[in-house]
Amino acid sequence: MGTLLFLETFMKYDAFSKCHPLVNFLFFVGAIGMSVVIQHPAYLLAGAVTGGIYYLLLNGKKGWKIIAGLLPMFVILTVINPLFNTLGETRLFDLFGRPYTLEALLYGAALASMFVIMMLWFGCYNKVLTSDKFTSLFGNVIPSVSLLLVMVFRMVPNFIRKTRQIIGARKSVGKGAGEAATRREKLSDGMTVVGALTGWALEGSIVTGDSMRARGYGAAKRSSFMIYRMTLTDWTLLAVIAVLFALTVTAAGFGQMTAVFVPDVELAPASWGLAAYTCYLLIPTVLHIKENVQWHISRSKI
Amino acid sequence: MKKSHIATLLVFLLLIPATLFLGTKLPGRSYYITGTLMILELMLPFFMVFEGRKPQARELVVIAVMCAIAIAARVAIPIPNFKAIFAVIIIAGIAFGPESGFMVGAISAFASDFFYQLGPYTPWQMMAYGAGGMLAGFLFAKGRLPKTPWDMTLFGFFAVILWIGPLLDSSHIFLMLTTINWNAAMASLIAGFPMNLTQAISTAVVLLFLGKPLLDKLDRVKVKYGMLEKGDSL
Image (cartoon, rainbow over all chains, first blue to last red; front, side, top):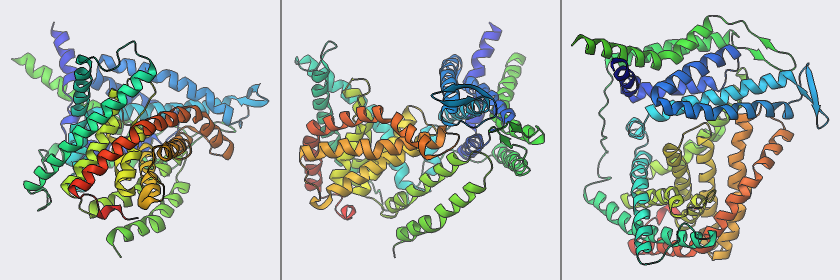
């Protein structure tokens, strides 16, 4: 029972998500930005493992499914590359009269893992930087666009609910396409529903707009709903992120990440740049685990 | 000169050449990062114009409504692979002009990805959808093209197959290819063609049947409340 509770809390509290949105955002910009440029296999492995661990910590069991879904993508992208890229020393076989080479296959694998890593980090980004954090982060830089986004985020679920209401209302008067309807019927019915939804939504939008104006929208600089403050931890994290990022970029400058696949595989030996990169990517995982271990210890003391 | 014009000039004369130059200096496979940065820089002037205009509350809400309808429409038409999003964006562009058309396209792409899954393709989607709305607004403004159902249908079909679709597929070129050359780029554009054709047909169908009624509703609101008159000039 004890371990079960422990595992549950392990997934629920993500310490990194509790940090200031700016810290979250800059971390992901760095992580995704680096992962799209680096193609050295050692770094790719580091990116895949750290990204995968954090993704699983955030998503729990559901995460395995998504990761399993990424694998076929990986395979397809890997085998496709030699079809376009025929350079390479080791010829495996000929396909459509063009050589299919081992080097190009390896290059394809590197590229496919870059894509998988990117998807993993984007998945983590989705979980951590929720829409409210995004708009609070950019509310001062692009106020109108952020407000637009906030409204869209609110309207979409609202409209989906309204659409279901319209469909239900039409069904109760004997109209609308059922499950067995043909495509044509479904289509024409759908159009009517979208038309009804638009009419309703536009009338409502004018009321909303006028109400906003009556409450003084546009009269003064808009203050934002900002509940995030930069704490000491946030500043420290920001400093750590900056230092590790700078180290990784410097390592790249020294050519530590050079990886050439075609026509011959040439890899730079792994050195301290790899350590810096791995540490950078481990920041959220370490925070997550540290917080949960502390929580577990303080609970077991009671 | 307006602030936004200066910004546009700066973007085209300084920012994009600088990105291209630095992109060639970066080690390894830097197409994706250079391409994404350029896309973001291309969109920058549009957002700056929008912010600089200080849009009124009514205009903001109407744009938000069009974005939300574009995203929510998939619930109303339960046919797999049938997307009404392009049609709604095109209608918004026709009704409110190129600038608002761009905003509706870009924002609905971004918001829709927020609901499903943000990814490396998000900037490309924002640009492609936005460009679609902008083209619609530009071509139908001031009666350049008549707003009849068949004109809209034809425009929708060709806009998706020749403009929005290829722009979306160009993300594959930057994202998936190890070496970018003409043949490989053409191959990925051709690979995307069947998908684009499906989308083009669904867009055309929606525009044929829904274009006119929806446009009438939007025009009615526009005339009734006297909206979006200044933003329409282009």
